[in-house]
Amino acid sequence: MIRAAERVRERLLRVSEALQTGGIDYAVIDDNAIAALVSKVDESAVRNTQDVDLLVRRADLNKIKDILEKTGFVYRHVAGMDLFLDGPQAKARDAVHIIFAGEKVRPEYLEPAPDVDQSEPADSFRVITLPALVRMKLTSFRDKDRTHLRDLLEIGLIDQSWCSHLPKELADRLQLLINHPDG
Image 1 (cartoon, rainbow, N blue to C red):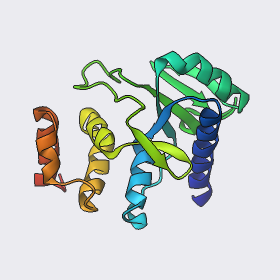
Image 2 (cartoon, rainbow, N blue to C red; image 1 turned 90 degrees about the horizontal axis):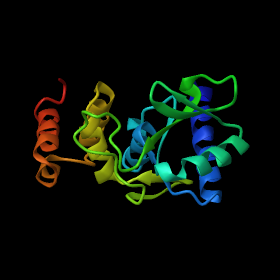
Image 3 (cartoon, one colour; image 1 turned 30 degrees about the horizontal axis):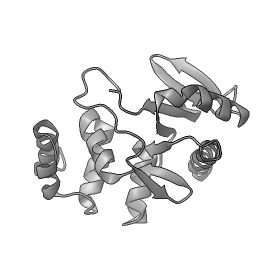
Image 4 (cartoon, rainbow, N blue to C red; image 1 turned 180 degrees about the horizontal axis):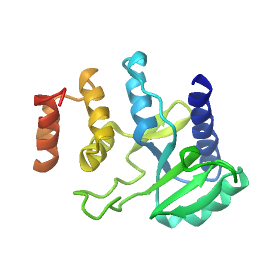
């Protein structure tokens, strides 16, 4: 179990170093971004993840392919998703998943993904800022996203005051989690 978490961290560091060395703007998003932000407040509240999710600009994709393939990753476009497998025998779980800045992940989403310029340094990589990450989580609002938002609420990284800075539909979603934290 510990080795699985270490492998994800190693993959995150390898891909981040490769992109930074290659001059590519990116931001770590989703589970690893939540972990990086939560760990600053309460390390015991950090959850493990099985993959790495990155926000990049679509215009950089060909350059990213060149950089990451030299690092041992294998590009695939599967079921509408762009990802880099961690080697030719890897599974989608052993991958780096790509989300494109400024584009909706799904057509029904309320907002597009933010730009990579909404990121900041964290450890050895760049992570999406908390406000941008919260908007992404409220936009997708899957069970996993609601769990992450509850974690942020529980440790005090976000609270009721955030509702006034969000579009109504996203604010309503956050309010729902505040009102019903166990539901």
